[in-house]
Amino acid sequence: MHGTRLLDEADRLMTVCNSCRYCEGLCAVFPAMEMRRSFSDGDLNYLANLCHACGACYTDCQFSPPHEFNVNVPKTLAIARHESYAAYAWPRAFEGLFERNGLVISLIAALCVAAFIFGFAVFNDRQILFGVHSGPGAFYKLMPHNAMAALFSAGFLYAVVALAMGIRAFWRDIGEPVGMKTDAASLWQAIRDTGELRYLDGGGVGCFNKDDKPTDRRKLYHHFTFYGFVLCFAATSVATLYHYLFARVAPYAWWDLPVVLGTLGGIGLLIGPVGLLAEKWKRDPVLADEARTGMDVAFIVMLFLTGLTGMALLLLRETAAMGPLLALHLGVAFALFITIPYGKFVHGIYRFVALVRYARERRAMGHTV
Ligand code: SF4
Ligand code: SF4
Image (cartoon, rainbow, N blue to C red; front, side, top):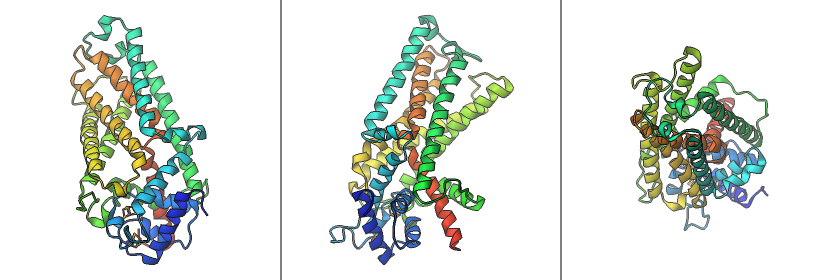
């Protein structure tokens, strides 16, 4: 007996699959499963977070419904994965944020945007708020740099601590000693597998949709989104270095590194989330945890709005729209920061940790990964 009925079902499926092994070439889940004769709760959570939800093992399975074995690995692992996010949440009092997550994220985003608009309106007179500002320090006429830096640093630090505590809980749950360090080769392998989204290809043919025709589009839009986010983060980091190391104050010229990185990242955050939403529409509901659709959509929309408001701010920063757009962009970005530990963002973190563990155990067994 496991901690939940869902994990009992995951155990049943993994036991069937371990006898069958037809899908062992599709992804990392099946080779990891084959290293085990029985499955603890932590093993099942590890396999669930290793799954990239490509759907191939459902389409390929001779025991999927209407067969009496009723094998549906993608859906069962998706539900287990989503339940694990709440179980690893820090502080535990916030695990409930994963329930009705779409509504929770929407409310937090609306509150953050409203707070920034209210703050801008209260602390700036009309001429400043709707004035045209240009040159270094233009943004800080509307909100002092120190206040902006303090607020976002606090939000970022909180998110990092909460994510680190979540990783600690996951690492413990899957049976790794808390202080265990990984070897550089396994870490590098996991970074490569994550960077390539190696296991989001259904064993080489692509992800499956309602029409049973596999396609690479879901992987492509994941790439746009992931690298868009990374580039936007890099833009913010470079701008921070500019400010504190070289006393160069934003906004910067269009050809300067933070703007180039931010523009490329912003484009990624426009194309990727729209594509992911379109692909989500085409997904066969039988593969997905439909009860958590709101969580997926809320995260995708938050990323899109971050890209959209950032690009609008860049294009209109020397017009009277700059003040309201800055409030909007800061509100969305702050909401994204503080909800990172309590939304779909964590899937990337736990999947990466699961890939590190997978690389480690494959090496320990003498396999090439
Ligand atoms: S999903 Fe089906 S075909 Fe694949 S290993 Fe499991 S039982 Fe076999
Ligand atoms: S859905 Fe894809 S990634 Fe998940 S277990 Fe099946 S084949 Fe592997």
